[in-house]
Amino acid sequence: MILTGPAIEERMGSDIIIEPYDKQLLNPNSYNLRLHDELLVYTEFPLDMKKPNPVSKMVIPEEGLLLEPGNLYLGRTLEFTETHNLVPMLEGRSSIGRLGMFVHITAGFGDVGFKGFWTLEIQVIHPLRIYAGVQICQIFYHSIEGKIQEYNSGKYQANKGVQPSLLYKDFEK
Image 1 (tube, rainbow, N blue to C red):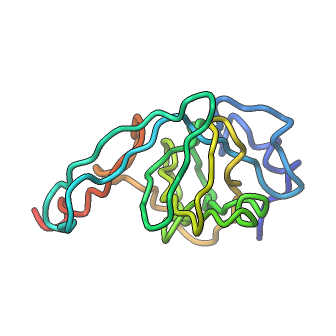
Image 2: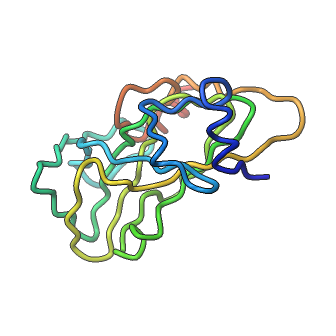
């Protein structure tokens, strides 16, 4: 089952933490998250799964930033979220999709116990000017059955900002 907006609000501060929280961003069954002003782009190709890949930081200026097709931009949500006893999910907003922008490639699924900023894997199908603070995606919550084992990854848990892939750490085991 998916939580309704009122159920999300009711669980704020216990099973759900969203900081900063603004009731105006609450929807009938989701909450809109906003885009932070910081992006990362990979700088050396080809990328290698077994190694850290170098990135460059970009800041979205007030007048916006033009994104180009064929590039991957790693962004993050302005909001920090923490979820217990529920499965958090992330999807782009339809208004964003109608502009030809994707906010995630495969990482829309969260884990019970995840806390941190959501890294967005942004791509556009044609040139698009973006702005920091835009309501870019929505988080929604599924109830869960069975014994819960919370997410406890050393890779992405409690992150402080945009994170490139840390897949190379899986090869170090």
